[in-house]
Amino acid sequence: MGLKEELVGLVGEEKIDELLKVVGANTLPKEEYKKAKDENKALKDEIEKAKLASLNSDELLQHKIKEADDLKRDFGIKSNKLDAERQFVNAGLTKEVYGDLLDTVVSEDAEKTQTLVNKFIGVLGKEKETIANKTKESLLNQTKKPENSDNNIPPKTITTKTFI
Image (cartoon, rainbow, N blue to C red; front, top):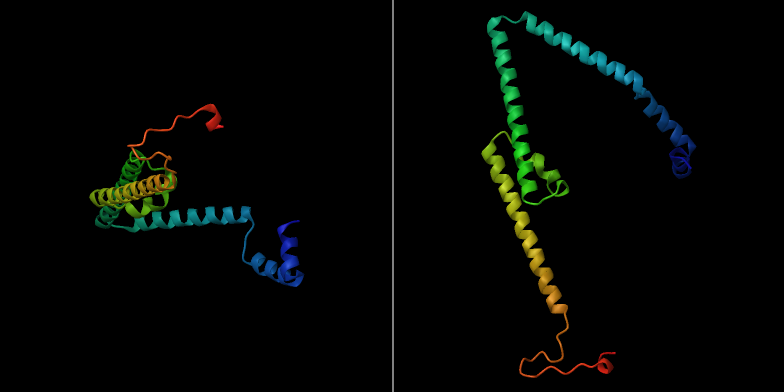
């Protein structure tokens, strides 16, 4: 049973047809979407070239400086992200643990990124240690003590008959 048949069973054929008309009117087939996207990109590139051609030398220089600053900022962020990932991996963390927070702790400022990563690793380390201690304590508390737990009483001799 397909999705359409399941939905028809839940909300009825009229509602499904109505929804398909609305959705169909607002969507493009994949090939048309790709073609429109490519045309849009080409038009944006042409507009950018026209803007650059109309700039005087000072404006062109300012534009190039802005582009260089943007590239420098992007490089810094990517570099800090790689450093942060390396630190997480060196701390024994997996991508599943730090993956969601990576973009949150990474910034343009290397020191700020370093500080946030160290704090994150510290918190996880403390939490891991706390869990290990609680687990160990719980296991020790649940373990039955031997009958002769008092050190002054010699242990009983265990024979095959008493063991079985």
